[in-house]
Length: 177
Image (cartoon, rainbow, N blue to C red; front, side, top):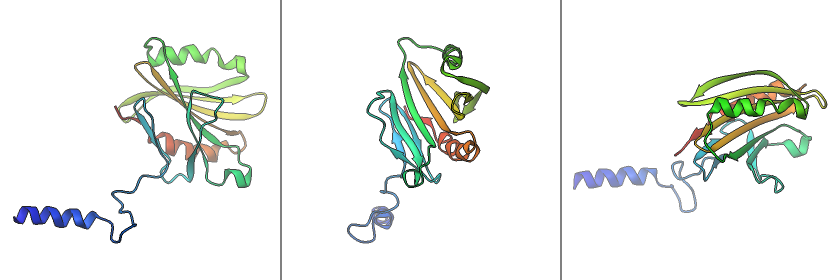
């Protein structure tokens, strides 16, 4: 009986204090995107919010933007793209295949390197577009036949401050299954 009472008191302490008020445990985490292919990412305290993915791009899962992007005309964004592969590839082979394509689209590779985050291998590429002076950071994770490409972009003049927020979001990436 004492154990049952202790469980009841513990559970009721977590409940909402008044009807219509959500407790912290039941409240959804703001800015969390959960993909049906088994990964999640969150904006946390970055000041960025998820927006709907553009209809014309079926591979873009979600887009994050600074909270005041419309009001201030801010071009910064973080896109989360999913590429479904026909056959499994290693992360290195996937990156090598696409690295050859960047110059065709006007990009110069500023740097690239593999890394480990949350026990998952990833790859980071820093790029600049020589035609429109836009800078990008692409972070790639790959699992089985799914590649997830997180692309942070902004004008080169403001990219350094944008990158700080993007990296905060990117660090939350994890495979959930």
